[in-house]
Length: 406
Image (cartoon, rainbow, N blue to C red):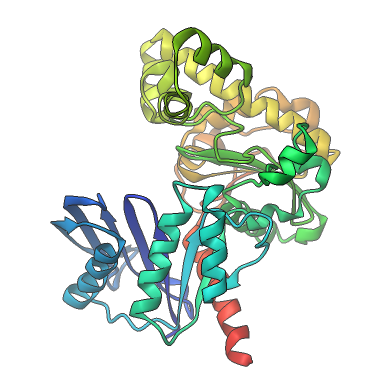
């Protein structure tokens, strides 16, 4: 057995997964919520033995104080000690949201790397400090094994200057490191590689568009396995319409709101990140609720759906142009994997590019990677369940192996 522990330490939660990389089986998963509160929540699931086509899982839930990330990590260790399985990882992989322009690959964590992650907190103040807190706690608990940082931004370090440069004063941009970084890179990388493997085609030969559609959403144009354009930018706010985030908008509207409505910087930040997107238009942030509203004929839900799809089509068309055509389009994450009406509407106008959706395949309930385009379609359309934890574990083991060889 080669166990790898994957940690996703957020501002108010700690998610974890223990995988046996010999078989890629998930041994345990868990979530510590409400970090910083007296009444935190803990859920720990132990994957049981297979029985027929199902797995017998055991989930343990309780409430406990979680004042900080050290306490959250201690709660995770306690969950393993109380409920199993034995926690003796070969290596620990850490999701880190922002690697700036410094980190373009999974990186063995050293004190210097920790300093760099801390310095990059200016680019991701809600994420990197929490990521770093998880790293510090994990390295204290497991000081004698490799710890690896896997950066959301790393996959997009292949963007050309034309794709990552914003047309603002060059000196200001350089001073404040303002450029497109892109996010969800771990998912985009995983899905594009799984798509190539599933189709039995060389990754290097494929022009791909990957839609990662969850509460946060992004789309990436991938040429030969390399990210060449992506919708999220300096922050995860740019691009597609999301659950609570606006995506693209005219920046001048912020000036207007500040001048005419007296909104502060914090007000504007909250507006665009927590009160916009689907929630801003329809009052709900979950696509399932929006689709239910569409079924009822609710005007706000219909508008939210139409705006959401309009943005998907706009990016699809732009990226087909950037790639000079497309061979594969994949949908992933919660909305991408489960919302057939979204997929159908997004692709409805792409017949000019050779996209032909199979309506029955699209509404099918099969799990796993599957084709939803017709056999005659010039472009293969796939649904590919993402697995960022597995991708992080793979990258962690690769770096840990290299570290052990020296």
